[in-house]
Length: 119
Image (cartoon, rainbow, N blue to C red; front, side, top):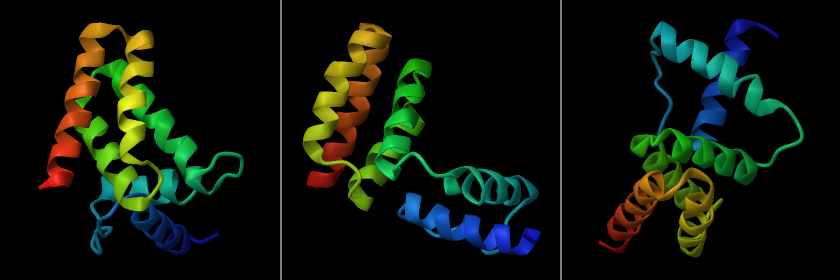
């Protein structure tokens, strides 16, 4: 597969994952992300989009990464991979694994996303 076709596949996959457009003139960093992550890794069989999104949210919760939590929650709701009820259940479940200090970050991210959705 040529680099250009992997880039095209990756850009299209990025737009299936996130409710935003891929950069038409990607930087080197973005090009590598589109080609490798979205053009190759996301193309592998075995995991559905919801599965991948939940894994990312779990990792972000364990790292206390507020930005990725919010991004994935918003994208999951926008793309139909998640439902509003899922955010509360994720908060409860993940808190048991990551602990209450990091769990409060998950809860805050979920609350922020739900508040923005309601506005």
